[in-house]
Image 1 (cartoon, each protein chain N blue to C red):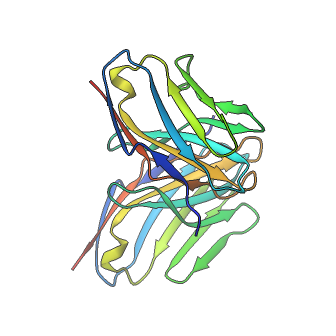
Image 2: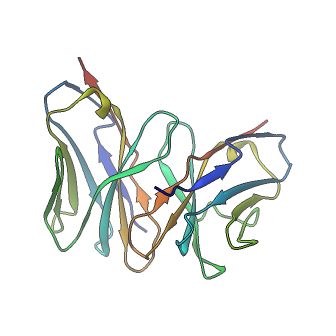
Image 3: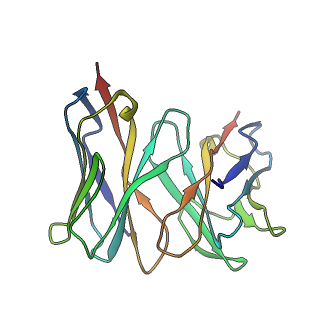
Length: 113
Length: 112
């Protein structure tokens, strides 16, 4: 069964550095998402992406964040200048249809020192 | 915006007994309610979902009920097994947007 994949599984970075988290959604899916989960807390929506543009973003998704689908398979989340509070597990998700099941990737654990 | 409350935060049940997790939501426009199971260090995985046009849905040992008037929905797991131990998240989504709003999660422990 196809799955969403993410790389790297764990990223450690210094505060102020830029990071790029990568995702490969399921191949026939059209809707893409990023969520984050701070340790021990709930999963929080960051951004949704469809047809090469952002559909919706949350308050968390400020100017330091950006998303891109650079080719036909990858979907990336960039954090321009990381802060300590960006430390979290970041999940990519994809969906075939709108308002239906979203399939989550295994996550990237981001640690900002 | 939507707010999803989930109770309890921790639940311990004897193996073989039933577990019930309850959630409430605030946005009357929400019409899709998925439940995710997350094992330690793993991705959230959808276990069951329900739409607002039905009041109950069942899949083997798992059932979900929805009360749109009261804006609450519940997950029922019967004949619990050790592999049911995990964190369970309820969530809600509305047709006007496709983001999923999660509850804070319930850590379910199945006791031998």
